[in-house]
Image 1 (tube, one colour):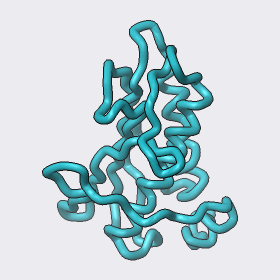
Image 2 (cartoon, rainbow, N blue to C red):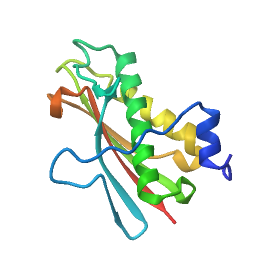
Image 3 (cartoon, rainbow, N blue to C red):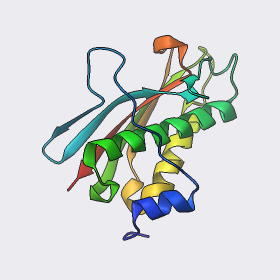
Length: 154
């Protein structure tokens, strides 16, 4: 799958990329230094609205995983908007995930798998990345998950 067209792969997975989001404060959605692209944190959305909730209280691990997957699609849309062509992505380097969770919730890594698995499904070997997953007390707007991405491009 190393040479597969990323857009063909998205179609095979039944994924239609949304329009890339706009920043909600004083920052940009993406910044590039050399061949490295940094994507700002994207928060979970459901039905076009912020997907709110706290893992370990109002949301299950599976719901959190679905939220993380939806963020991965939004991150890929932003990466597409930045590069103009997802086939220019040489590697997804790292994901960093913040999970709005209770003090005793310990499955942040499983929640984050929702994004990691999708990125690997879309980009194949190029999608295998380093990662961090943190439990946090709160995320802007009460979102359940926020994820940022770092990629290497041609």
